[in-house]
Length: 178
Length: 198
Image 1 (cartoon, rainbow over the protein chains, first blue to last red):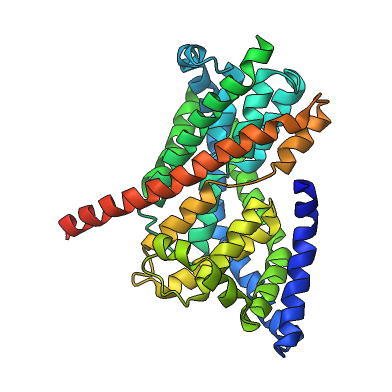
Image 2: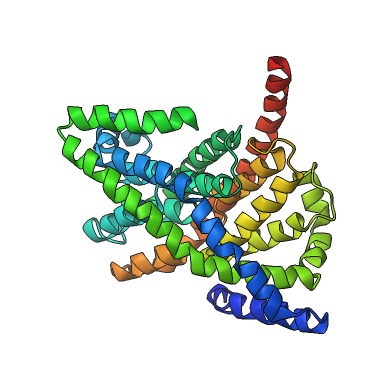
């Protein structure tokens, strides 16, 4: 059912927009090209912000600091029955979408897609967005330099998301695994 | 943002030196920079397409219609934005695109919202409250079906990959609602702090 909605969402949206446009006598072709002109401008506008955030995150990942952090925090993880291999996913998911998916598929293949680690990571990845990327791109596109409390909001919300994922998953999946 | 940028790079250099991974860190500058441009350029086409469609939707009065329908919610979420602004209709579209997992449509619509919110913004270099609330909605990543995640689980041979949908929905809803609440609370605290600093 939900897959069906996902499949039809874009066709239906396009149909409604174009039909409404014609009914209201909007010159749809001219207006489309007029709006589309901004596509290039926006994409170019966000490049400096993307470079800053993506280079920073790439350097951080290459430095191995995330693995060290995972080791450092392992006693705490043990207490909440969080598999150690899930920690890099928890940290990286706010920073880089591609890296998160890479880590997640690594876990799914390495520990098995039916392992608790894979399920926990699946919920974490599925319920989150790459906060830093969104902040950089969205604010960058309109030239905002002071983000005020948006960053803090994103970080706290991500943390709550991870806590919620651990709480929900340990109730939902752990009894069946033992 | 200044401190985060600083710490990202300085911590990477220090940790890279300690871990003996300094060459990797230096190389990652190049690959990261290349990747950023790739990401931006991959956006151009789809961005142009959706911005074109959004312009028709706006001219046809569709965006205004949606804005009217969700007025009770947006009035509370975005106090500073006039209720007839096209931004509010686009907020609803952006939310729907995110919820349906249409990432390709969500970003262009989201950027359009930012542009419209910027018009109402008094200080063009500093984020408005409305922007912060909107970003809270976006960074929480509310999504009904985690299609990519399920695809990866299927690829790895999971027995029952769809069993993660229910817990994911629960968690994403919790994260989404708390994100908006946090933005609202921090918004109040921030204003007080800024008044004090003036």
